Image (tube, rainbow, N blue to C red; front, side, top):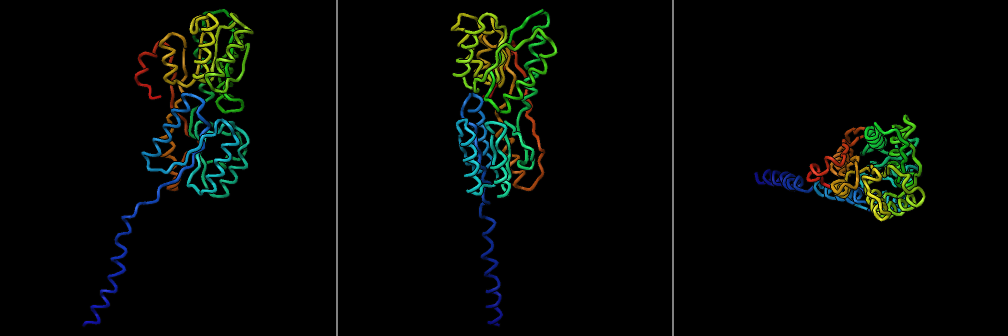
Length: 319
């Protein structure tokens, strides 16, 4: 009888030892994110959205700032591969030159997500999905707004363009979409076009050069983002002209600074490009880790805000 009791006790011991296991916390998903930099109000909001969303989702975020240099982003991605993170996400500085490092990620079996900006590659198996805006459509929205505004004007309408970072997806696509709309009417003419690198300081500097070269011939400024438009507004005022009146100003992003400029009557319209991609990104990262299939392209829903609605919309702005 005694021997039987001992056997039962021995059998029970391993079961008892196994009981606490479910109480152990599951290892968090590790996400490596390589950000472009902090070149604008938009980018700052984008970074905040990613950091806060990762925290809320319980995702361990490894974050790097590339200071707008592709080589820094490639270095960061290689570092994430070495650290064996679960997922790599990044917002590419430019469209080309990513294949080598992304093949390395693929060989390491680390899925890659593109956010905000696309890449140009013949191999679309190098990334799982691209979350972000339709930049070409943003350019079209800007063009349609201008065509509608100048409907009764016989022209000519001389446009200067402040482009984003050379080779970046938003710069390429916003230009393409805008030109697609205005080309149907010969009264619209882009007389100067130069990069302002998406920064306020460069936007001001390039606009100063445009004003020196073209002066009062300029009717419209099309800026690929709000920060460059805000820099250009300073240049226009310093040249003794009235932004929003003497020169119509169209920009893209819809940041708070643009709404303030619209409420002051200095910016005519801002096409929305939402930086709040964090929640979508974390949701996709969890789906990928769970082995679920995700769409190859996830488009952000966005609007367009002319100055007439700025005061009403301003309290709703989160960035």
